[in-house]
Image (cartoon, rainbow, N blue to C red; front, side):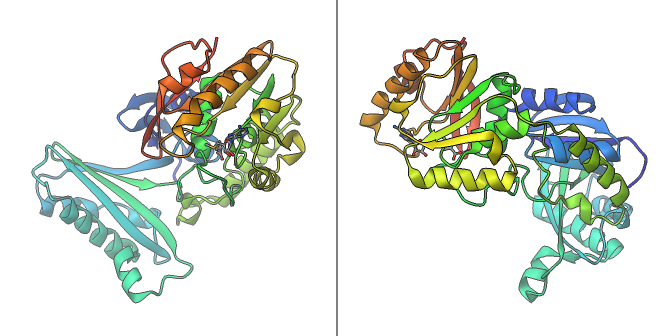
Length: 377
Ligand SMILES: C[S@@+](CC[C@H](N)C(=O)[O-])C[C@H]1O[C@@H](n2cnc3c(N)ncnc32)[C@H](O)[C@@H]1O
């Protein structure tokens, strides 16, 4: 990897952009700016690694590797042929190219993707994903995803640095009903300004995503500490630097000193949550119990009650949902000094809690649904 300042782009789910920008600024990103679909920023090789390892809310990190004028397919092919693909890719890579065209004379995204893919394969000797799928001979190959964007006759080529979506932390190998994406759960915690200095309770924790993400945050453990990233398969991968980045992460870790509690009425979900927490390395800091919401004990504050209760579009009988949300409101009211952050699709359900929220629900996208985070004062 070169000692240059890269143009990087962190992909965000709708609604997460401002939280992600703050997160990237905290990691030392240069000039983080919110744009459609995420946050652009600048950084060196180390920041590229740290953004992947540490971002709790990004979906993936892309690296801009080329930008050139391309008013036609011939110019596109020749520009793509001049990219230093060998810096990143080699015969061990199976390459997939995704293209979009906007206000450009090259308007056929399939043709644009094909030109770039052919160029990369010629220069770096990698294999096209479709070819590998037909031959079926790709065991052990590394995946490389390239994003091509044609905008007003300028071609921008970016390489995915992350690999699997960053919400895949490698600890949640089992899920209960309607699990929340890990990076969305982290975004809710950060949006509710939970920083690990007060208690946290998820009384409907399902597979344990909120308590586990909270424990990772409170323990200053990187969310990506258990997984691989695409950049680790690049020709220019600097393993010594990566070891240093990981060492620094280990040095930051500290024990969690606040209560983190998860409960669910479903014993199967609680067992799954415990095993997920064990895999994440945070089980000693979380108290999981099988218990219905109504039996939530009195707990000393301050604290944050956080949950995504069932909502109609996914699980739950609409007739019972209002009662459940009303019961949730009662629990929050009898926990003095506690705030609540509730993620739901429906503002009527949020108001069934009888709680007063700071705003009308910060909108977020969750698996194709529009949800809102309702936070109490
Ligand atoms: C949408 S899921 C939560 C998903 C969780 N955040 C995750 O990421 O896996 C809602 C959970 O609420 C639980 N639940 C529903 N009614 C409950 C009640 N009355 N008391 C306790 N848990 C309840 C369900 O068992 C389910 O696990």
